[in-house]
Image (cartoon, rainbow, N blue to C red; front, side, top):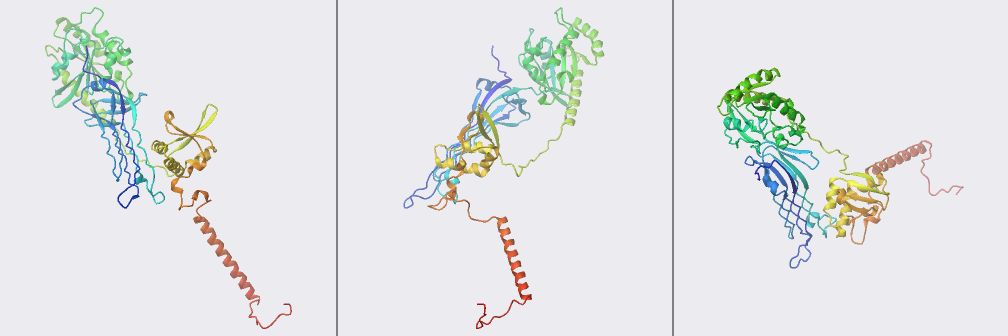
Length: 512
C-alpha cells in the first residue's frame, strides 16, 4: 500500500545555461559597415529551494527527481540582449535539511520563506558590441554562455517539534496526541498503526508548543529493524522526549522497566546529526508517561513501578488517554520543560557576525599546480576566472582563441607558468578535471587581436613600446643634474686659474 508521506529524496538539479552572445555588424542603406551591434546573452535560471508552510512531504520530488531551470536566451543583432531564464522555485517543508552527495550539510531550512540556491544559473555571453574597444573596434566573435550549475542533493525532512512521543508500537502515543491537540492521527489496535509522524499543537495556559507522534520503536530500531530507524531523524530537533509506556500490555516478556531500558538503549545507539546543533538523544530531557491507567491492573502496575523510575531521576506521570486522566498535569509539565529548553537555546545562540574578507592585493585569482600524468608532466591552471573564460570561448574562432590568450596573459598566467617550470611545448590544462581544456603551451600564444597596431604594423614584433618607465626617467634626470654640476665646477676652477681671457682673433700664437 502506498503512502503520501516521503521524508527523504535524492534530487538532481541543474540550473539554466547562459545564452550565447552574438557577433553582428550594423547594416543600413548607405552604411554597410556601421560597426558591431551584437547583443549579450541572458542569464540562466537558478534552482532555489524555498520553505513553504503548506508543504508537509517530499512526495512530489520522489516522483519527479529531475529538476531543470530554463536557459537564458541568446542575444541578437541591433544591440538586443537575450532574456534571462526564470528561476525555478522548489517548495519544501519547514525543517528540510539539504546535503550534497558526500553527506555534507549545505543548508538547514527553518522559517517561512527560507531559501537556498541549489544551483546557480550560468552567465550570459557578451556580444561583439560589448567586446569592442579602441584597439578592437570590430570584433568578429562573441562569448558563449556559461553552463549552469548541476549537482545531486539529498533532501531530508526532520520534523520541527518541541516534544516527541516515543515508545513501543501500540503504547498509546497516537491517542495522547489526539486528546492533547487537535491532530487526528490514525488509531487502531494493531502494531505499527502510525506509519508517518503526526504533529499537533498543544496549548497549556499561555504556553503553546508542538508535539510529535513518532512511529513505534522495537529492539534493534537503531540498526534498521521496524520503522524506528526510518523516523528517528524526526526527534533530532525535539527538546523533550516522552517515553510512553504501555502498562496494559499482554505480552509475557514485557514490563514498564524493561520497555524503558530497551528504548533508552536504542536512543543511545542512534547517531544524531551533529550539524543540527542538538544534544545526543540520550542526553535530552526525558519524561516517562505510564499510559492506560484506566485499566485496573495497569493502574496497579504503574503505581508499583513509579518509585523505581523516580529513583532513576526521571519525572513520571500516570495517565489515561481514554479516560483523560492526568493529561492536564502532563501538559503543563511539558510546557515548563519546553520553556526551559527554549531559554537554554536562546542563551547559547551566538549572534551571527558579518565577516568581510577583502581580496588580497597580491591575489591573482588563480594558481598553478604541477601534476604527473603517467610519465608526463602537466600544469593545471586552477581558478574561477580562467575556468569561466575557457567555458565562454568559441574555439572554432581563431580571434576568440586569441582573445582568450590575451586575457590569460594579462592575468599573469604566462609569467606564473614560467615560474612553475613550464617550457614551450608543456601540456597545460584549464578547467575541471573531468572536462578540462588541454593545449600545448607556447609563450607566443599570448599575442592576440587587441595587440595589433596600425595597419601594416605588428607591435608583437617590437621589443617594447619605446616609453621610459618612471624610474628610468628619474635616473636620467639625476644624470643630467650631475653633469651640469660637474660642468659648473670645472668652469669655476678654470676662471680662478686665469684661463678665462678674451682672445684677440688677430693675434696668432707662435705655436699655431
